[in-house]
Length: 177
Image 1 (tube, helix red, strand yellow):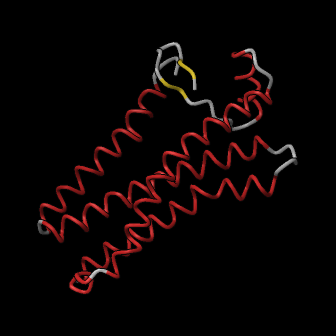
Image 2 (tube, one colour):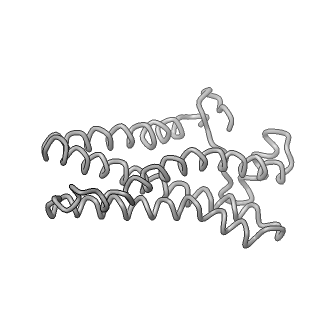
């Protein structure tokens, strides 16, 4: 991670060889050092995301075995299905770089690994946000009713969109970012 001229966070994930070499020159690193740093940064980000998705997914896997689960109406079972599916897909995407790494291990394909991990992390986070929002919708629908659940889901999703996407993309688009 580095600070741009504006002082804000700016990820340096490789998108092609030119970015790696440009970053290497700017930071006084070799291209291999840039890729090693990129892999380490992605690993740290993935550790945070994977923990969240694992907790959510584990919770969802236990729900059908609860006595009140059979009381869910069509809306509830649909929301549960969306929540479970998005969480399962997020889990798969967040773990995918492990398999990719195994396949390219010692093949000098670290740049491809960084690009793949950056893509799957971005997609996995979008699915995790969907899972979190729909989990809030499901739980609040059972606990408080439909409209409070919709409001709670909208609030959680809005905070996620603002903090995970709008603020970082706004900073990224600033001059020097």
